[in-house]
Amino acid sequence: MAATVKYSEVEVGTEIPAVSYDVRRLNLVMYAGASGDFNPIHWDEHFAKSVGLPDVIAHGMFTMAQGGRFVTDWVGDPGAVLDYGVRFSGMVPVAHDSGNTLVISGVVEEKLDDNKVVVGLTARAADQKVLSQAKAVVRLA
Amino acid sequence: MPLNTDFIGRTFPPTPPYEVSRVKIREFADAIGDTNPIYRDRAAAEAAGHPDVVAPPTFPIVVSLGGEALADPGLGLNYAMVVHGEQRFEYVRPIVAGDVVTCTSTIADIRKAGRNELLKIVTEVRDGGGELVVTTYNTIVERGV
Image (tube, rainbow over all chains, first blue to last red; front, side, top):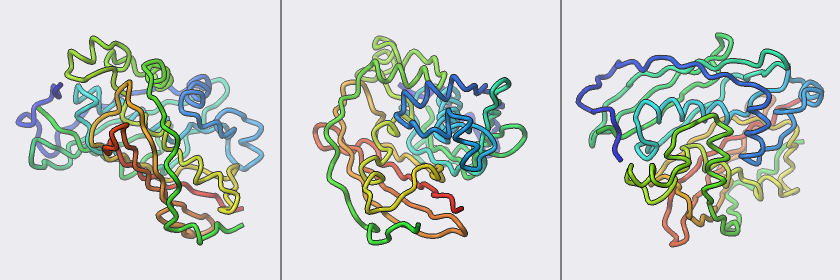
């Protein structure tokens, strides 16, 4: 399928409104199982603190997956994503009781040929940037 | 312990074939909280022009964590001190249920960055016909103490 967003209807600077995603310990346990990344820094608070971390931290790939979800929900088709890359620039500590919240927003940074655009993503947790150089290349309708 | 830079440029043998199931895709979609029917319902995926249930964009990490490359004791990686630095996926097409994929990983670079060490791994994920599906670029950070 086709993307539902039309190339002709976006411009450089078109903003994609922010979406919030809750992160709880349960999400990290599920993500560990689904991804096969059982590093205890993501689910064992005692271990995480023993290696100098503030708390259990979310898998970087969990945060990246929320960015992917943000992009595919906007574009309408996961098959429209041609390239997706991020740098993990901040930790997402996930507290026992309150968890954490990721807030992701996007902007069209560039229009390429062949209906492709570059979407730049901003991801924050507790007002701190947790991804940098987060970009997806998607093909629009 | 510094990482063994002799590993730079080393390509590991292809992983055993991994059959991507609908159940695994659904499990992954559940874990990331994404309720899109295209990840669960074959009819929805077909209606959208895909041959079967589609995997989310970050799903290739399931098969391309670099297991064998990272597990080699000669590399000297202390897994407890590892965090993820960067990740990129360059897609030829999305992974779909029924794909039988094989990964070939190469250690592209090992270098120091302050007290940390960076390890870059490039993995080609190919389908049963040998066609490239996605290339993954993974930078992991071993935190210095």
